[in-house]
Image (tube, rainbow, N blue to C red):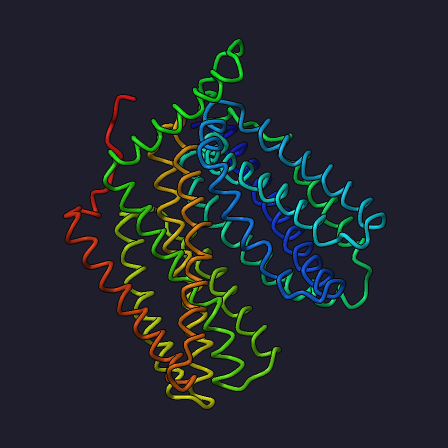
Length: 433
């Protein structure tokens, strides 16, 4: 590629990262403010769980359609349309917030359903279009910078959100999210979605609604069939699903470990989450400096092995207790963030480089839905484990972390033995669809 193409690729990369940070930061701030507003107005703790319940539900409902729509229509138009609907929904919510004060929970649920549905389309379209927006040599940078951006947005928004909620009325949170979404849409509009690859094939425009739905479902079935024929692709999806399920332990056990086992404060818990976020940031920086993404599937698999060891170490930190156990926990949280980046980014970049452009929407839709569906199941499972209260809380926390780590190591070993795959030579096989 000539110098001008390389320069344009870097320019598009910078715009993508900027839009991702604005979107993540705005959404995180708004979600934070919305949760606390609902808690304050309704007194229901359920408000904090709404988003976690609606996200996987919307993902499963839209799964048969998102991928085929993304693969057959303009990704740029899908993203802009999704963000336009998001903006209009926020404007209506701003109006209804004052009109229907006694129906805030219902209005918030409707808003979250719309926002999560739009997020599903936006996320899948973004992932599927990455290979068309930048040169192959910049794909790894794009994925690692995206991880860094998401981590920074999470760390900063949790601190800024708590501070702003004590000072500002909730309506300003809505306005802030509106500005963030509009800014993101403007940035997306300036991007060239046909910079590196040609447009995906479109469905005929003269088909009836019934035939259109049948064609969407047909494309979805072809996508599932394609995934099942690709051994390395399927291996990665299974591995990602397992990791998403097991990550539920951090949502349940980490607050218990910090607040009840170590008897620390909410400030310490916030610091622990920030340390984990900085681990994500450093992981992205280190991965960015890796000039070549060598053996990505194998490296992702190795990182899950290390995660299993980290989980076991968490269990021992609970048993050690005191200042030594606390410091150990912070160190382990930092490296957990580093490992999660090293698990997700190599696999994502490998998919973006290897998959045909006409199938990326369906594959990323399945991958994203598996993550959305299994993460809450993991939270429910570990919540059930801790609700049993069969042991002293310290021992229960320790045993849960240690057993989870052992199970993850065992599953990784068995999965590789059963599939008999040479992960160092992972590739996508050509298949006639």
